[in-house]
Length: 183
Image (cartoon, rainbow, N blue to C red):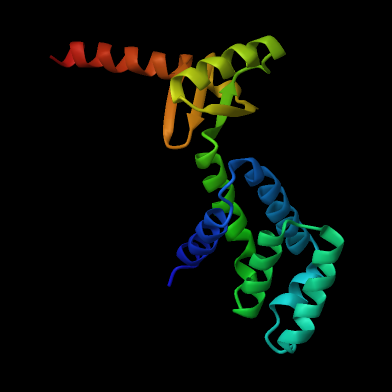
């Protein structure tokens, strides 16, 4: 079975075990923190994912990490289950899927906004408000600068692209003029 599908099952199970939406952000922060530790600490990652090391010894190492990190009980249980089932290497995928599930449950979205020049704080606030209204969600913006769009804004929220760039407008005009010329 595809790793994403397996990770999705664990992430959905974690989400289902947290009925109170007010606890989702704390769980997400804990999963993300454990994932970051797993990703950055090569020795920890190699120990936890190594099937040649007795599972009880790996579980003791994980228990030490969990004592130091103090994650919510449901997150600690998830990490233990992943370890015991030989799926701890899926932690990064589980964290990614869980973040998407939390955003969906809390009606949030991340938007990538590309402009030719950096936006001021007031421009960002106005644009965020417009994206909130457009998407019906609370949008967290990630801003990027790309001089090749010439002007305007390109916003991506999930699978939706809103292209208000000058480059795209010029391309549309060019196509329209060429279509008139050939007809």
